[in-house]
Length: 116
Image (tube, rainbow, N blue to C red):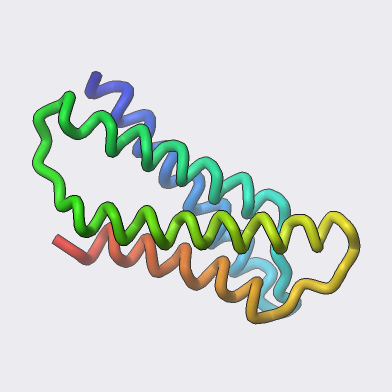
C-alpha cells in the first residue's frame, strides 16, 4: 500500500509541475494550455486516491487542510478546463484566467508544504 501511496504522491507532484511550469513559461503571453487541464485533473485524481489511502495506512491527516486543498484544486480544474476549451477554439484567454490557474495551483503547493 505504501508503494501505491508513494506513486500517487509522485504523480501529484507531476500534475502541479505541469500547471505551474507551463504558467511560468507563458508568463509574458498568459494563456491556459490544455496540458494545464491535464495536470489539474491528475492532481484531483491522485489527491482523492491519497485521501482514500490515508485511513488504510493508519496515517494522521489534517482533514481541514486537505479539504481546503481539494476545494482549490477543484477550482483550478474548472478554470483550466474553461481556459483549455478557449485555447483549443483559438479564442482569447484572459490574463486573469491564466494567472488564476497558475496562481491558485501555486497556492495549493504552498499550503501543502508550509501548513503543518
